[in-house]
View (tube, rainbow, N blue to C red):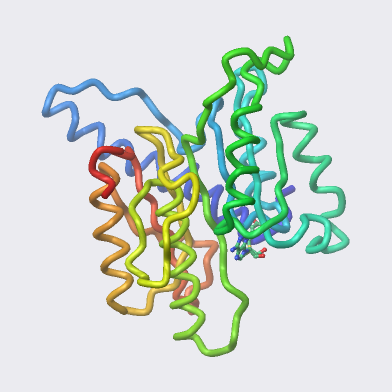
Length: 258
Ligand code: SAM
């Protein structure tokens, strides 16, 4: 089974919200006559996934069940903490459960994703993903990039809900800047390596806490510039009394990001 409440949120978004949203988008596209690929789930069997704030590993584990090895799917997971450090005894050995699904196409990187050094490791991990793991064929793997960036990152809680919301919103903004090259409105932020790492057409799913501040509106505006469709989701698995929501941004458009 899945180890955490978090993983049920991702499952719900993948299996319920996404198909629903996609059906609506397809309906629109039919009218304009364009041809969209038929996507039933957010996590495609050959997806290249970057999971930011991955510990204790629930999202990575769920994602690994959705990928098909022969299709070259991979998960690169990043956290300040190691996966094992944060494990509850009942979830033991999460890394081997993920590896059972993905073999060497699972990479865990311990570090702060905002640091250049961590970003180099992230990009290096994607560059080395094998396209066809059965034949151990990594030829042509160079230059591969994620097409789905997930962030369930949260800043350590201070107990003050406003401070917590602002700090987590800041992480979300940085995840979007890294994924989609949207930059940051926080004046203290200077761009780091790898901004805009997401493939054209790719998607971003990012957690934050609503607080009604200006930053939130700015985050939405940046998302709307860089993606074709943007949605705020509140999964049923997320506690009602929590202000936690997920921003799902689909169809990344590189040229509009800045
Ligand atoms: N999605 C995970 C799961 O299903 O098991 C749960 C993620 S937990 C809610 C949030 C994580 O974000 C924490 O483990 C924390 O260490 C991580 N985090 C916070 N800031 C980070 C940063 N700057 N870089 C990397 N990870 C970070």
